[in-house]
Amino acid sequence: MIDIDRLVLEFQTLLSIESPSKKEGKLAHYLADIFEALGYRCFFDKSAENTGSEVGNLIVKIPGMIPAPPIFFCAHLDTVGPCENLKIIFENGVFKTDGRTILGADDKSGIAILVELARVLRENRFPHPPLEFIFTTCEEIGLLGAKFLDLELIDAKEGYVLDSENPEVVTIGAPSSYKFKIKVKGKAAHAGLEPEKGVNAIHVLSKLIAELNPGRIDQESTMNIGIISGGKYVNIVPESAEAEGEIRSHNSKTLESMIQQIEDLGAKVEKGYQPKIEDLPKVSVRFEKLYQAFLISPDDPILQPIKQAGERLGINFFFIKKEGGSDANIFNERGKKAVILGTGMQKVHTTEEFIRVKDLVKATQIVVEIVKAKGESFK
Amino acid sequence: MSLLNKVLDFFFPEFCEVCNHHLKPQEVFVCRRCLNTLPFLKLYCQRCGSLVSESLLEKGIDRIEYCSYCSQKNFYFDRVFALFQYKEPISEWLLRVKFAQDFRLAFALGKLIRTFFSFLLSDVDMIIPVPLSNERLRERGFNQSTLLAWGFLGRKPFSEAIFRVKCTKPQTELTGKERWENVKGAFLAKDWVKDKKVLLIDDVMTTGATVNEAAKALKMKGAKEVYVLVVARNQLM
Image (cartoon, rainbow over all chains, first blue to last red; front, side, top):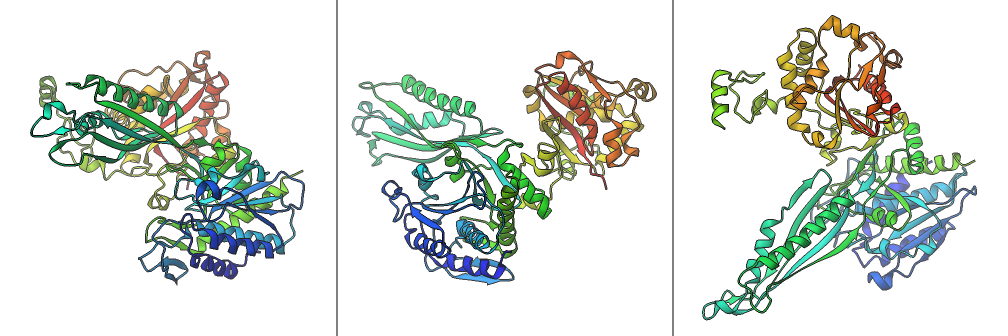
């Protein structure tokens, strides 16, 4: 059913189309051509206005053979850098690069799988529900495509995101994540002539940071301070200082208490700092939600076709929680249930990125079996 | 190191079980060097304790929430915590506890698992060793799981919440399927486990039949969640 040579060739072609975030246009139009040639309806949503990408998210609708509820599959179009002048090396059944750029199997392997699935459906007649393919833009720069995806265009209530590594591992949970920015406003003064008239913002900020406890908070939560900046010259008492960090947790209560803790700490440091000049220093902490946690329970129907596919292919699937965010976080947050399937890609976001054809084929088989199982279970 | 500890250490020095070196105060049961050589269980399904090929570890996966095996089997317990593979020297130690009545060893093993799973102490409401039947208890004179739990807790565990009402054949003599049949209806729990988060402690888990049956008895009486803590995870050949 699956044509391995065709899959490999298509994957190679996709890799050679450069598609950094916000410049997914070429790839998206290439895909739209393929799906239209296969006879499926393609359109773009208007998310480009908000994401700043060349194109919106590409949506492909594949009509079902049975009136079952539709399901969606999602892969993202963009890749991380560096990706200029990609040189693909294919040997012993492994795709890799010459070590100067990333390969781009994240997430072009997912796209290749969906293209192959569409072709398989065109060639073989078996009962399957209507499918919707969502190709999102700007995933790597903050899940923007999924955030601004026009949900009016999607009928499916649940689906599968093809964007993790091992095909036998299904991601059923991910943490919530918040970014935070701590800003301290002090008062500038000449450091040698009149230091008494200044309030040293860097000093205040370091007091605050010294009391934070970055690292692993508990089994499900972490905190990090990632950026710190402030000050202009060595002879000036710095007027402002900033630190940025993030917190993530699988548990929303822990997350709330962490936020509260950081806010309280800010207030405490601001209040306790001596001497104060004109009500300074001022400490402000701002939180920005990046994505919302989700967790799918073991007996959820969305997993049923995966288990069936596993039985048929002789695979024992493992279900894990991931530590990072992906389009699936956004889908779950916006009311579309989604889990993440593996495509076989490995060492993603590094120049050592590679993918075994064996794994890519296995992932494709799994996806095809999921569609079949979904069709067969409909009564 | 407090003075009392120093005195205790002088009169009752503790030695590493493996290499017989004098233990430092923060070391429990085995010295740090030998601890690294023990057959730790690196990756297993957190839901059913299934062993998983360690090749996944290299791909950065260090925790599995559930697998397709257990999500279809519907076990009565909710989580499994296991520390070792059932291999030398762990297997030898556990046999020594059971058949050579080495109480000190059982207690020390309990203490050792405490150093790895101390977070469970505050997480659960009740810690219960898997019980023996009265006949077996009379025959053997002690319950090895109680001793392990004693070491784990640091005090005598509360064991009156669940009873073994049927004297079953030892599981080790049976094959996989027979094990499930053998323990059916073997346990009965008391009402006061209702809405409690219970931790069951046992020495070895192989198919999970025994702990599953015990967990079933607890769940029947309304236990909210049942966790299982075992020293070693074995696999049927």
